[in-house]
Image 1 (cartoon, helix red, strand yellow):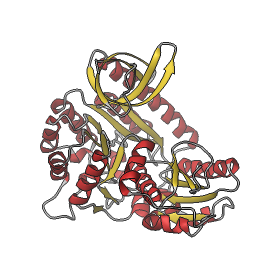
Image 2 (tube, rainbow, N blue to C red):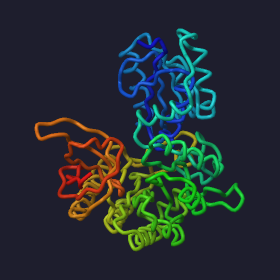
Image 3 (cartoon, one colour):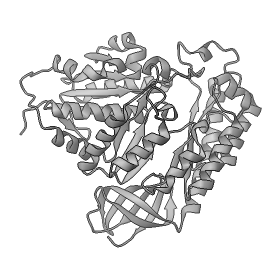
Image 4 (cartoon, rainbow, N blue to C red):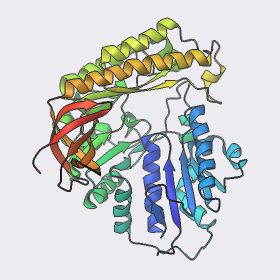
Length: 431
């Protein structure tokens, strides 16, 4: 039985937060802590929070209280965007022992050490071992290439909690990707707040050149780009998808299908720009899926504006979308706008659009039947019919298939034969 202190990490929110948690997990492992992959009781519970909506804030508070109930003797640490935006609110919660915002994340392991129940219990492990353990906890590696945002959209708190845009140096990104590849990682996900702005603060560098460098200088089997703005989708960029290592999945935020609402939001594209980017993707990348974010109930959104959002999702033929009712964030300019929509109406619009998006997702899955796709297999469960594997296709469909071979963390070809709910049924090729 190990006498090292155990840590449970929980992440809310975006892939950038997942990247930060993965970095923290690795740092804790290197410092000699045991990081638990599931929900076992732990000596230390760390919650990496989101604050993009009031619902995210509420989920964070609920998670903290639940963790303390599971293990009243645990130390509770809260970090991330909520901790950056409203640290005093969190410090007022009796369950929490330490609040550390995004700016404190590089020092968080040291800060946790100062709270330890048994300071002598940690025993440092090697860097390679820590990388391998991170991959055992999470099948895909999140690699941060950029963070921060200079766009200051009217509704968004991210510039406040993440700061100004800044790019990670190319050599550092390549080295990180190579470390994960050497440890057996099959897929890296490039994360950031504004990926399309990558390289503005570096010499002769942009997102296209970065992707070329990663493709040329690493052997990672699969590369996924987490999110790109409509204005980032150029022919030059899409040419890179001729390399099958780049996953044919594009997350392109829409936010609204109404031109007037996009202008009020201070977005830097029009609805037609969004549709142009989707058409460009589908014309250049075979089998590509396109997903989006949509906000409903923004201040001043008329029923016509809302219908424009519904129509835009249908016209784009989205494979899926995250639908969010607008949430007032203190400190943003939209919080001071007039004509706020009643909560009941925001909820109604969110339900209606979610229903439309669900039908679009089913149509995309239906159109995928008969395709042979590359699937990264992640988990297995035994059944009376044999071992059933679950994984993710290159174009971001969750799939299940039967095989008695050990497919853990392997990419194989599989033919999509049908679907039930959100799961595709796959016939796995010979392995």
